[in-house]
Length: 456
Image (spheres, rainbow, N blue to C red):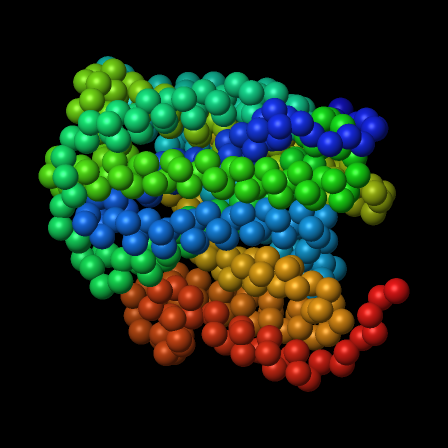
Protein backbone atom coordinates (compact mmCIF):
# COMPACT_ATOMS: atom_id res chain seq x y z
CA UNK A 1 0.00 0.00 0.00
CA UNK A 2 2.40 2.67 -1.21
CA UNK A 3 -0.24 5.11 -2.41
CA UNK A 4 -2.49 7.33 -0.34
CA UNK A 5 -5.12 5.23 1.40
CA UNK A 6 -8.49 5.23 -0.25
CA UNK A 7 -7.94 8.25 -2.46
CA UNK A 8 -10.93 8.63 -4.74
CA UNK A 9 -11.52 10.91 -7.70
CA UNK A 10 -15.30 10.57 -7.40
CA UNK A 11 -17.34 13.53 -8.67
CA UNK A 12 -18.72 16.04 -6.19
CA UNK A 13 -22.25 15.36 -5.03
CA UNK A 14 -24.11 16.21 -1.83
CA UNK A 15 -24.62 13.44 0.70
CA UNK A 16 -28.15 12.26 1.29
CA UNK A 17 -29.61 11.93 4.77
CA UNK A 18 -28.67 8.28 5.12
CA UNK A 19 -25.04 8.87 4.17
CA UNK A 20 -24.82 11.78 6.59
CA UNK A 21 -26.17 9.56 9.34
CA UNK A 22 -23.52 6.94 8.55
CA UNK A 23 -20.71 9.51 8.72
CA UNK A 24 -22.09 10.92 11.97
CA UNK A 25 -22.25 7.42 13.47
CA UNK A 26 -18.68 6.77 12.34
CA UNK A 27 -17.49 9.96 14.03
CA UNK A 28 -19.51 9.13 17.16
CA UNK A 29 -17.88 5.70 17.27
CA UNK A 30 -14.41 7.23 17.02
CA UNK A 31 -15.20 9.56 19.94
CA UNK A 32 -17.19 7.34 22.27
CA UNK A 33 -14.82 5.23 24.34
CA UNK A 34 -14.57 3.94 27.88
CA UNK A 35 -14.12 7.39 29.42
CA UNK A 36 -17.31 8.61 27.79
CA UNK A 37 -19.15 5.63 29.27
CA UNK A 38 -17.72 5.99 32.76
CA UNK A 39 -17.94 9.70 33.54
CA UNK A 40 -21.69 10.50 33.14
CA UNK A 41 -23.04 7.79 35.49
CA UNK A 42 -20.45 8.68 38.13
CA UNK A 43 -21.36 12.35 37.74
CA UNK A 44 -25.04 11.53 38.18
CA UNK A 45 -24.34 9.40 41.25
CA UNK A 46 -22.15 12.01 42.94
CA UNK A 47 -24.27 15.02 41.98
CA UNK A 48 -27.43 13.32 43.22
CA UNK A 49 -30.26 15.83 43.51
CA UNK A 50 -28.09 18.39 41.68
CA UNK A 51 -27.54 16.12 38.67
CA UNK A 52 -29.35 18.42 36.21
CA UNK A 53 -27.08 21.49 36.55
CA UNK A 54 -24.02 19.25 36.81
CA UNK A 55 -24.99 17.49 33.58
CA UNK A 56 -25.59 20.79 31.80
CA UNK A 57 -22.10 21.94 32.77
CA UNK A 58 -20.68 18.62 31.61
CA UNK A 59 -22.40 18.92 28.23
CA UNK A 60 -21.04 22.43 27.63
CA UNK A 61 -17.42 21.30 27.89
CA UNK A 62 -17.68 17.57 27.17
CA UNK A 63 -19.74 18.09 23.99
CA UNK A 64 -19.26 21.75 23.11
CA UNK A 65 -15.45 21.80 22.97
CA UNK A 66 -15.04 18.64 20.84
CA UNK A 67 -17.76 19.72 18.39
CA UNK A 68 -16.14 23.15 18.09
CA UNK A 69 -12.84 21.40 17.41
CA UNK A 70 -14.36 19.27 14.64
CA UNK A 71 -15.80 22.37 12.98
CA UNK A 72 -12.63 24.44 13.47
CA UNK A 73 -10.38 21.78 11.95
CA UNK A 74 -12.83 21.30 9.08
CA UNK A 75 -12.78 25.03 8.34
CA UNK A 76 -8.97 25.12 8.43
CA UNK A 77 -8.58 21.99 6.31
CA UNK A 78 -6.79 19.85 8.89
CA UNK A 79 -4.97 20.17 12.21
CA UNK A 80 -1.67 20.92 10.48
CA UNK A 81 -3.14 23.92 8.68
CA UNK A 82 -4.77 25.22 11.85
CA UNK A 83 -1.60 24.93 13.96
CA UNK A 84 0.41 26.29 11.03
CA UNK A 85 -1.08 29.72 11.68
CA UNK A 86 1.34 29.91 14.63
CA UNK A 87 4.34 28.68 12.63
CA UNK A 88 5.35 25.73 10.48
CA UNK A 89 7.74 24.43 13.14
CA UNK A 90 5.13 24.69 15.88
CA UNK A 91 2.63 22.86 13.68
CA UNK A 92 5.01 19.97 13.01
CA UNK A 93 5.86 19.46 16.69
CA UNK A 94 2.46 20.21 18.22
CA UNK A 95 0.34 18.10 15.86
CA UNK A 96 2.72 15.13 16.07
CA UNK A 97 2.58 15.30 19.88
CA UNK A 98 -1.22 15.45 19.79
CA UNK A 99 -1.42 12.33 17.61
CA UNK A 100 1.11 10.43 19.72
CA UNK A 101 -0.35 11.40 23.08
CA UNK A 102 -3.96 10.73 22.13
CA UNK A 103 -2.93 7.56 20.27
CA UNK A 104 -0.19 5.04 21.08
CA UNK A 105 0.93 6.83 24.26
CA UNK A 106 -2.48 6.74 25.94
CA UNK A 107 -5.81 5.97 24.36
CA UNK A 108 -4.93 3.07 22.05
CA UNK A 109 -3.26 0.88 24.74
CA UNK A 110 -6.04 1.71 27.19
CA UNK A 111 -8.74 0.47 24.84
CA UNK A 112 -7.53 -3.11 25.15
CA UNK A 113 -6.80 -3.02 28.88
CA UNK A 114 -10.17 -1.43 29.68
CA UNK A 115 -12.12 -3.85 27.51
CA UNK A 116 -10.36 -6.81 29.13
CA UNK A 117 -11.00 -5.40 32.61
CA UNK A 118 -14.73 -5.35 31.89
CA UNK A 119 -14.67 -8.87 30.44
CA UNK A 120 -12.57 -10.41 33.21
CA UNK A 121 -15.49 -10.95 35.66
CA UNK A 122 -16.93 -13.37 33.10
CA UNK A 123 -13.72 -15.47 33.08
CA UNK A 124 -12.85 -18.31 35.49
CA UNK A 125 -10.88 -17.42 38.61
CA UNK A 126 -7.10 -17.54 38.37
CA UNK A 127 -4.23 -15.62 36.84
CA UNK A 128 -5.33 -13.16 34.18
CA UNK A 129 -1.89 -12.57 32.60
CA UNK A 130 -2.17 -15.18 29.83
CA UNK A 131 -5.84 -14.48 29.04
CA UNK A 132 -5.04 -10.75 28.85
CA UNK A 133 -2.16 -11.40 26.45
CA UNK A 134 -4.33 -13.59 24.22
CA UNK A 135 -7.16 -11.06 24.35
CA UNK A 136 -4.95 -8.08 23.54
CA UNK A 137 -3.33 -9.84 20.56
CA UNK A 138 -6.77 -10.75 19.20
CA UNK A 139 -8.15 -7.28 19.97
CA UNK A 140 -5.39 -5.39 18.19
CA UNK A 141 -5.37 -7.86 15.29
CA UNK A 142 -9.06 -7.20 14.67
CA UNK A 143 -8.57 -3.45 15.08
CA UNK A 144 -5.64 -3.45 12.66
CA UNK A 145 -7.60 -5.45 10.09
CA UNK A 146 -10.51 -3.00 10.31
CA UNK A 147 -8.13 -0.04 10.03
CA UNK A 148 -6.34 -1.29 6.90
CA UNK A 149 -8.47 0.93 4.67
CA UNK A 150 -9.25 4.16 6.54
CA UNK A 151 -11.44 5.41 3.71
CA UNK A 152 -13.86 2.57 4.41
CA UNK A 153 -14.32 3.13 8.14
CA UNK A 154 -17.81 4.44 7.46
CA UNK A 155 -18.71 0.92 6.30
CA UNK A 156 -17.57 -0.65 9.57
CA UNK A 157 -18.07 1.98 12.25
CA UNK A 158 -20.93 3.85 10.62
CA UNK A 159 -23.00 0.87 9.52
CA UNK A 160 -22.09 -2.06 11.79
CA UNK A 161 -20.24 -1.56 15.06
CA UNK A 162 -21.46 2.00 15.69
CA UNK A 163 -25.18 1.17 15.38
CA UNK A 164 -24.60 -2.03 17.39
CA UNK A 165 -23.05 0.02 20.20
CA UNK A 166 -25.93 2.50 20.19
CA UNK A 167 -28.44 -0.37 20.31
CA UNK A 168 -26.74 -1.99 23.32
CA UNK A 169 -26.52 1.34 25.13
CA UNK A 170 -30.20 1.95 24.38
CA UNK A 171 -31.19 -1.33 26.05
CA UNK A 172 -29.57 -0.29 29.34
CA UNK A 173 -30.58 3.36 29.10
CA UNK A 174 -34.25 2.66 28.33
CA UNK A 175 -34.48 0.09 31.14
CA UNK A 176 -33.09 2.64 33.59
CA UNK A 177 -35.40 5.40 32.34
CA UNK A 178 -38.55 3.27 32.39
CA UNK A 179 -37.86 1.47 35.67
CA UNK A 180 -35.32 3.31 37.86
CA UNK A 181 -33.77 1.13 40.54
CA UNK A 182 -33.61 3.90 43.14
CA UNK A 183 -33.80 7.63 43.75
CA UNK A 184 -31.17 10.38 43.74
CA UNK A 185 -29.06 10.58 46.85
CA UNK A 186 -27.68 13.70 48.52
CA UNK A 187 -25.14 15.82 46.68
CA UNK A 188 -21.63 14.58 47.41
CA UNK A 189 -18.73 16.92 48.16
CA UNK A 190 -17.41 16.82 44.59
CA UNK A 191 -20.47 18.71 43.31
CA UNK A 192 -21.69 20.45 46.46
CA UNK A 193 -20.27 23.96 45.94
CA UNK A 194 -21.28 24.68 42.34
CA UNK A 195 -22.74 21.70 40.43
CA UNK A 196 -22.74 23.40 37.01
CA UNK A 197 -19.13 24.58 37.30
CA UNK A 198 -18.00 21.23 38.68
CA UNK A 199 -19.78 19.46 35.83
CA UNK A 200 -18.03 21.75 33.35
CA UNK A 201 -14.65 20.87 34.88
CA UNK A 202 -15.47 17.15 34.67
CA UNK A 203 -16.35 17.50 30.98
CA UNK A 204 -13.21 19.56 30.36
CA UNK A 205 -11.13 16.75 31.84
CA UNK A 206 -12.30 14.28 29.16
CA UNK A 207 -9.88 16.09 26.79
CA UNK A 208 -11.98 14.94 23.83
CA UNK A 209 -11.05 18.16 22.04
CA UNK A 210 -7.61 16.71 21.32
CA UNK A 211 -9.16 13.58 19.84
CA UNK A 212 -11.42 15.75 17.69
CA UNK A 213 -8.36 17.44 16.18
CA UNK A 214 -7.02 14.08 14.98
CA UNK A 215 -10.12 12.83 13.16
CA UNK A 216 -10.23 15.23 10.22
CA UNK A 217 -7.92 13.35 7.83
CA UNK A 218 -9.80 10.05 8.13
CA UNK A 219 -13.25 11.64 7.97
CA UNK A 220 -12.15 13.47 4.82
CA UNK A 221 -10.97 10.15 3.30
CA UNK A 222 -14.40 8.65 3.94
CA UNK A 223 -16.16 11.66 2.46
CA UNK A 224 -14.03 11.37 -0.68
CA UNK A 225 -14.97 7.70 -0.93
CA UNK A 226 -18.62 8.80 -0.74
CA UNK A 227 -18.11 11.26 -3.59
CA UNK A 228 -17.48 14.51 -1.69
CA UNK A 229 -14.23 15.76 -3.22
CA UNK A 230 -14.66 19.53 -2.91
CA UNK A 231 -12.87 20.98 0.15
CA UNK A 232 -15.71 23.35 0.95
CA UNK A 233 -18.27 20.55 0.75
CA UNK A 234 -16.06 18.36 2.93
CA UNK A 235 -15.85 21.09 5.58
CA UNK A 236 -19.64 21.37 5.58
CA UNK A 237 -20.18 17.61 5.81
CA UNK A 238 -17.56 17.18 8.56
CA UNK A 239 -19.23 19.97 10.54
CA UNK A 240 -22.65 18.34 10.13
CA UNK A 241 -21.19 14.99 11.20
CA UNK A 242 -19.68 16.65 14.27
CA UNK A 243 -23.03 18.16 15.21
CA UNK A 244 -24.76 14.81 14.69
CA UNK A 245 -22.20 12.90 16.72
CA UNK A 246 -22.36 15.54 19.45
CA UNK A 247 -26.16 15.35 19.61
CA UNK A 248 -26.07 11.56 19.97
CA UNK A 249 -23.40 11.76 22.66
CA UNK A 250 -25.47 14.39 24.51
CA UNK A 251 -28.51 12.10 24.57
CA UNK A 252 -26.43 9.22 25.95
CA UNK A 253 -24.72 11.46 28.51
CA UNK A 254 -28.10 12.66 29.79
CA UNK A 255 -29.47 9.12 29.97
CA UNK A 256 -26.43 7.78 31.81
CA UNK A 257 -26.37 10.75 34.17
CA UNK A 258 -30.00 9.97 35.04
CA UNK A 259 -29.04 6.32 35.48
CA UNK A 260 -26.28 7.30 37.88
CA UNK A 261 -28.48 9.68 39.83
CA UNK A 262 -31.14 7.03 40.38
CA UNK A 263 -28.48 4.63 41.71
CA UNK A 264 -27.87 6.91 44.68
CA UNK A 265 -29.68 4.56 47.07
CA UNK A 266 -28.49 1.36 45.34
CA UNK A 267 -24.74 1.88 44.86
CA UNK A 268 -23.88 4.93 46.99
CA UNK A 269 -20.29 3.81 47.54
CA UNK A 270 -19.37 3.19 43.89
CA UNK A 271 -15.98 4.72 43.10
CA UNK A 272 -16.18 4.76 39.29
CA UNK A 273 -18.73 4.80 36.52
CA UNK A 274 -18.10 1.21 35.46
CA UNK A 275 -19.29 0.04 38.89
CA UNK A 276 -22.44 2.15 38.54
CA UNK A 277 -23.23 0.79 35.07
CA UNK A 278 -22.56 -2.79 36.12
CA UNK A 279 -24.74 -2.47 39.23
CA UNK A 280 -27.57 -0.98 37.18
CA UNK A 281 -27.32 -3.64 34.48
CA UNK A 282 -27.23 -6.42 37.06
CA UNK A 283 -30.25 -4.93 38.81
CA UNK A 284 -32.25 -4.96 35.59
CA UNK A 285 -31.00 -8.09 33.82
CA UNK A 286 -29.07 -10.19 36.35
CA UNK A 287 -25.93 -11.94 35.08
CA UNK A 288 -26.93 -11.13 31.50
CA UNK A 289 -26.61 -7.47 32.47
CA UNK A 290 -22.95 -7.94 33.35
CA UNK A 291 -22.41 -9.44 29.90
CA UNK A 292 -24.33 -6.51 28.38
CA UNK A 293 -22.01 -3.96 30.01
CA UNK A 294 -18.96 -5.99 28.94
CA UNK A 295 -20.23 -6.00 25.34
CA UNK A 296 -20.83 -2.23 25.45
CA UNK A 297 -17.30 -1.58 26.66
CA UNK A 298 -15.81 -4.04 24.16
CA UNK A 299 -17.53 -2.40 21.19
CA UNK A 300 -16.80 1.13 22.40
CA UNK A 301 -13.12 0.36 22.97
CA UNK A 302 -12.78 -1.46 19.64
CA UNK A 303 -14.36 1.43 17.73
CA UNK A 304 -12.05 3.98 19.35
CA UNK A 305 -9.01 1.78 18.76
CA UNK A 306 -9.82 1.34 15.07
CA UNK A 307 -10.41 5.06 14.67
CA UNK A 308 -7.20 6.10 16.41
CA UNK A 309 -5.01 3.54 14.63
CA UNK A 310 -6.43 4.82 11.33
CA UNK A 311 -5.97 8.48 12.25
CA UNK A 312 -2.42 8.08 13.56
CA UNK A 313 -1.41 5.86 10.65
CA UNK A 314 -2.87 8.29 8.11
CA UNK A 315 -1.24 11.34 9.68
CA UNK A 316 2.26 9.87 9.88
CA UNK A 317 1.91 8.28 6.43
CA UNK A 318 0.92 11.58 4.85
CA UNK A 319 3.40 13.67 6.83
CA UNK A 320 6.51 11.50 7.15
CA UNK A 321 5.92 8.37 5.09
CA UNK A 322 5.35 7.40 1.48
CA UNK A 323 2.27 9.62 1.31
CA UNK A 324 4.23 12.78 2.08
CA UNK A 325 4.19 15.40 -0.69
CA UNK A 326 8.01 15.40 -0.44
CA UNK A 327 8.90 11.83 0.57
CA UNK A 328 12.54 12.31 -0.34
CA UNK A 329 12.85 14.91 2.40
CA UNK A 330 12.20 12.33 5.09
CA UNK A 331 14.20 9.35 6.17
CA UNK A 332 10.88 7.55 6.59
CA UNK A 333 9.78 8.35 3.06
CA UNK A 334 9.34 4.69 2.07
CA UNK A 335 7.14 3.73 5.03
CA UNK A 336 3.60 2.87 3.91
CA UNK A 337 0.32 3.46 5.70
CA UNK A 338 0.03 -0.24 6.51
CA UNK A 339 3.45 -0.20 8.15
CA UNK A 340 2.56 2.85 10.26
CA UNK A 341 -0.75 1.33 11.35
CA UNK A 342 0.89 -2.01 12.15
CA UNK A 343 3.60 -0.28 14.19
CA UNK A 344 1.06 1.66 16.26
CA UNK A 345 -1.09 -1.44 16.84
CA UNK A 346 1.89 -3.62 17.81
CA UNK A 347 3.38 -0.97 20.12
CA UNK A 348 0.01 -0.47 21.82
CA UNK A 349 -0.43 -4.22 22.25
CA UNK A 350 2.92 -4.49 24.05
CA UNK A 351 2.25 -1.43 26.21
CA UNK A 352 -1.20 -2.66 27.23
CA UNK A 353 0.40 -5.79 28.68
CA UNK A 354 3.69 -4.67 30.20
CA UNK A 355 4.00 -0.91 30.46
CA UNK A 356 0.63 0.82 30.72
CA UNK A 357 1.24 2.37 34.14
CA UNK A 358 4.61 3.76 33.10
CA UNK A 359 3.35 5.13 29.79
CA UNK A 360 0.39 6.80 31.51
CA UNK A 361 2.79 8.58 33.85
CA UNK A 362 4.27 10.24 30.75
CA UNK A 363 1.24 10.72 28.54
CA UNK A 364 -1.25 12.20 31.02
CA UNK A 365 0.98 15.23 31.84
CA UNK A 366 1.64 15.58 28.11
CA UNK A 367 -2.09 15.75 27.45
CA UNK A 368 -2.49 18.34 30.20
CA UNK A 369 0.24 20.44 28.59
CA UNK A 370 -1.25 20.19 25.09
CA UNK A 371 -4.87 20.92 25.99
CA UNK A 372 -4.65 24.70 26.68
CA UNK A 373 -2.97 25.62 23.37
CA UNK A 374 -5.35 23.26 21.56
CA UNK A 375 -8.38 25.05 23.01
CA UNK A 376 -6.94 28.44 22.08
CA UNK A 377 -6.28 27.27 18.51
CA UNK A 378 -9.84 25.99 18.18
CA UNK A 379 -11.48 29.12 19.58
CA UNK A 380 -9.29 31.47 17.51
CA UNK A 381 -10.13 29.48 14.37
CA UNK A 382 -13.60 31.03 14.37
CA UNK A 383 -12.03 34.47 14.02
CA UNK A 384 -9.16 33.33 11.82
CA UNK A 385 -9.72 35.98 9.17
CA UNK A 386 -9.34 38.81 11.67
CA UNK A 387 -6.46 37.21 13.57
CA UNK A 388 -4.58 36.46 10.34
CA UNK A 389 -4.45 40.21 9.68
CA UNK A 390 -2.72 40.73 13.04
CA UNK A 391 0.22 38.31 12.79
CA UNK A 392 1.33 38.60 16.42
CA UNK A 393 -1.96 37.25 17.80
CA UNK A 394 -1.55 33.58 16.89
CA UNK A 395 1.97 32.96 18.28
CA UNK A 396 1.44 35.18 21.34
CA UNK A 397 -1.88 33.71 22.50
CA UNK A 398 -1.15 30.09 21.64
CA UNK A 399 2.38 30.45 23.02
CA UNK A 400 1.09 31.84 26.32
CA UNK A 401 -1.37 28.96 26.69
CA UNK A 402 1.36 26.46 25.80
CA UNK A 403 3.84 27.86 28.34
CA UNK A 404 1.25 27.86 31.13
CA UNK A 405 0.04 24.39 30.13
CA UNK A 406 3.57 23.00 30.26
CA UNK A 407 4.23 24.74 33.58
CA UNK A 408 1.03 23.38 35.10
CA UNK A 409 1.77 19.84 33.90
CA UNK A 410 5.37 20.05 35.14
CA UNK A 411 4.23 21.18 38.59
CA UNK A 412 1.84 18.25 38.73
CA UNK A 413 4.68 15.84 37.99
CA UNK A 414 7.49 17.39 40.03
CA UNK A 415 5.51 18.66 43.02
CA UNK A 416 2.05 17.08 43.06
CA UNK A 417 -0.25 18.82 45.52
CA UNK A 418 2.33 21.42 46.53
CA UNK A 419 1.33 25.11 46.30
CA UNK A 420 2.91 27.01 43.40
CA UNK A 421 2.76 30.50 41.96
CA UNK A 422 0.35 29.18 39.34
CA UNK A 423 -2.25 28.75 42.08
CA UNK A 424 -2.57 32.54 42.22
CA UNK A 425 -3.87 32.73 38.66
CA UNK A 426 -7.62 33.30 38.18
CA UNK A 427 -9.57 30.05 37.64
CA UNK A 428 -6.54 27.96 38.69
CA UNK A 429 -8.74 26.11 41.16
CA UNK A 430 -10.74 24.56 38.32
CA UNK A 431 -7.75 23.81 36.09
CA UNK A 432 -8.19 26.89 33.88
CA UNK A 433 -5.37 29.03 35.22
CA UNK A 434 -4.10 29.57 31.68
CA UNK A 435 -7.34 31.13 30.40
CA UNK A 436 -7.26 34.70 31.79
CA UNK A 437 -3.54 35.36 31.09
CA UNK A 438 -4.01 34.06 27.55
CA UNK A 439 -7.03 36.32 27.02
CA UNK A 440 -5.02 39.30 28.28
CA UNK A 441 -2.11 38.48 25.97
CA UNK A 442 -4.47 38.06 23.02
CA UNK A 443 -6.09 41.42 23.74
CA UNK A 444 -2.73 43.16 24.07
CA UNK A 445 -1.33 41.72 20.85
CA UNK A 446 -4.56 42.57 19.04
CA UNK A 447 -3.97 46.22 19.95
CA UNK A 448 -0.21 46.25 19.37
CA UNK A 449 0.22 44.00 16.34
CA UNK A 450 0.66 45.65 12.94
CA UNK A 451 -2.45 45.24 10.82
CA UNK A 452 -2.04 43.58 7.44
CA UNK A 453 -4.26 44.58 4.52
CA UNK A 454 -7.24 42.38 3.76
CA UNK A 455 -6.64 39.70 1.14
CA UNK A 456 -8.10 40.27 -2.28
